[in-house]
Image (cartoon, one colour):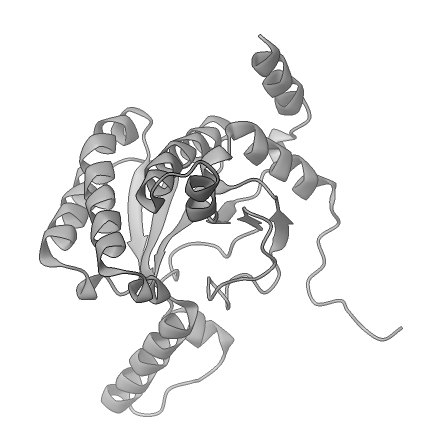
Length: 249
């Protein structure tokens, strides 16, 4: 009852007419969560799936149009092979188990990153999940997989160069570059959430978060709940958003 009362109190503070269009999340702290409990790291990753469900359900419930989760970075391949293999297995398990629920909630799945570098079975499961949710018109849930913002910028520049080589001179400006990013068909994040208290972007959406509002919590990702997301949105709505108006005066 206490949890329901706290949740209702937070919901009452949210202005549904001023929701962020796009929320992005750096999900951090799975390993530390497991270490504190003397569990293997994979137990933290598995527990983190519950937090994914919490965030997805909260955004769908409020009517936030876009949610992007930093699920697996290009740097994650530096981790032990056993851990990365288990992470890919967890991803495949999530995709197979959650599709029915995503469809029930009218959620469309999307993915960004160098997907072609993932193992073929993972690619097949992703393609199936994308196809099975393609007709949904509610929340767009995007998983950043084998993703790095610097890699994304390199890929965008390569596309621009290739376009120019086939079409003559190409205009190189901010709109042109944005049109070749992985995120070209979605708005830039209004709100970027990071768990575990770390104060860095970790090579995530560097171009897109230029004017995003940042919200950091000490909470480790497996402990992140809908209430944390509601609080992040409440704090976001209290801020006066500024777009480059910083000077020496």
